[in-house]
Length: 173
Image (cartoon, rainbow, N blue to C red; front, side, top):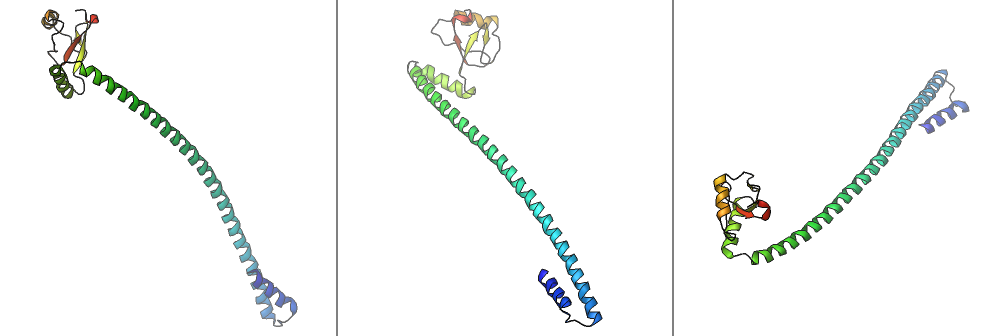
């Protein structure tokens, strides 16, 4: 567009065009080309401003993404550390359980495992202040007297939830 305007201006200045009508048309075309060039330059400036704004937004979002990714990486590392600790603790508890289970009579262990499966993972519960801590129901006086009358090596069970009751010195029995 600039080249065309320069060429037309050169033709006008050279005097090669002698017809007044052609001269007028050439001048109108030069003015029209200058206006069109100005419009296009405005469009280019607007596009450049929008590009700059978009680039700033990309930079901002990239920074935010890096921040969020760092937080996610930190959370993942903490989760993995916690999982490793839990796995170690679970293994320790499993070994301890195996040792304890080895000292319990087979029939009692079988009963416990059956109750544990039926009761959502808890096969025995502590008897504390007349209350079964498995079902959280207080034993009535008759049940409590039966538990008191049972010998220390007798397996007693809660009448409500059927779990094995563990009697301790805190039970008050």
